[in-house]
Length: 276
Image (cartoon, rainbow, N blue to C red; front, side, top):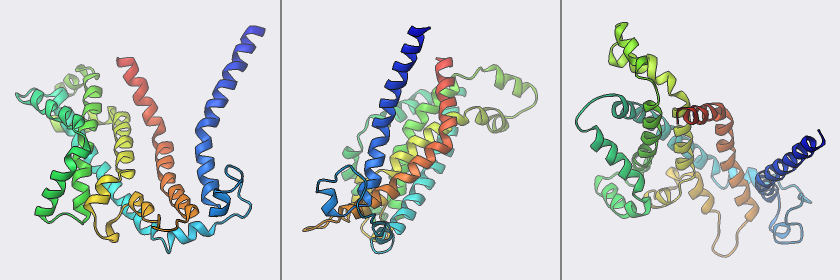
């Protein structure tokens, strides 16, 4: 009994240490956002602020334009997640469950899409968007975001579809279901955890993306949150507390999304482990 208690206590200590190391960066970011430059670069680096500067948040939201950048990022992320989820749910189903000649080639193209680094596609993408007149607007970012979000989601959903027994579809077909009804009523509800997992990856990739947003957008009206926060850095002086406030605002949606979809992600991981 003593050895079991010792082992349990040791595990709790290890888990508590891991939890502290994960929570500390968030704590540091929040306190960082409520300090002045003098405190940030002084002796009070990781302690609580001596003077709580909530004005950093109000300044970031009003004078800094963070609210506009935040709404732009919400639009880009929501539109990308929705379009990618709809396209990949159908594409992965066609690749994994249907019989057609070019499905191996289609899957190969999606696989290649994962291997291509976004940096390598930046210049030709810039030239293409410029010639089509799409650079600088909402479509100029949405199209690349959707295109680069599709391959990973297809890979995740294809593997999940393949793990579902074919007897489910056969029973549905015997009961008179067509292919579309079978997909919508039988298969799609079963892959909700995988769709949630793929959507989280798509959301994080879109929300945190900087390179395309900084290159393909010229006007401040279409800037995303990462580009807006980067613009706070001045040439001669920088209000780091203001940047910290912007980073906290940018972090909150990712935490909220994870908490809302964490159960779906866990179900997806457990189901994948069992099927594997």
